[in-house]
Image 1 (cartoon, rainbow, N blue to C red):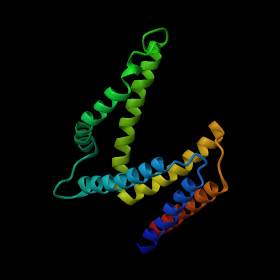
Image 2: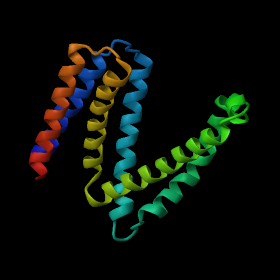
Image 3: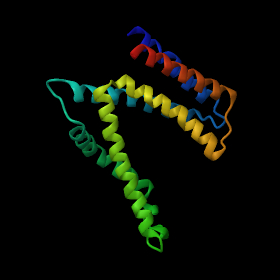
Image 4: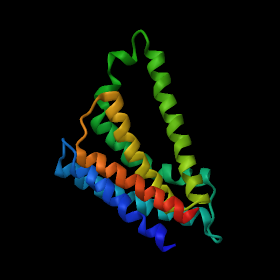
Length: 176
C-alpha cells in the first residue's frame, strides 16, 4: 500500500538523523554504510524473488548453499590478508583454547541460523519487511551501545531513533 511505502521515508530519515548526530562521524564510514544498505536492499529483493518465484523457487537452505559458495573466495581472501596474524594468537593454543574455539564455532552456527531466518522472513513477508526489521536493529544497536558500553548519544540520534520507530509503527499499521 501507499502508506507502507510512505512509512519508509521516516524510517530512512530517522536512521540518517542518527548518523548525522553521531559523535564519531566519519564520511568514509558513512559512505560505506550507504553502499552496504543499498546492496543489502538489492540482495533482499533478489532473495525474495528466488524464494517465491514459481518458476525458480528455492528453499532457504538451497539459497544459502548457493550464496555461501560464491562468498568463500572473497571472504577467504579477506581473512588471509587481514586476519592471518590472529591464527597465531597464543590464546588459540594455550589454556582455555577449547572454550575460545567453541565460541568461534558457536558464532558460525548462530550466523548460519540467522541467515536461514532472514530467508524465511523474506519468503513469508517481503524484502521490505526485512529492511524494516533492519532499521529496528539499528535503533536497538544504539540502545544496547548506550546501556552496555555507555557510548554518548546526541539529541539528534535520539530524535532519529524516535522517528525511525514512528516509521516502523506506520508500516505495521499499514500492513496490519
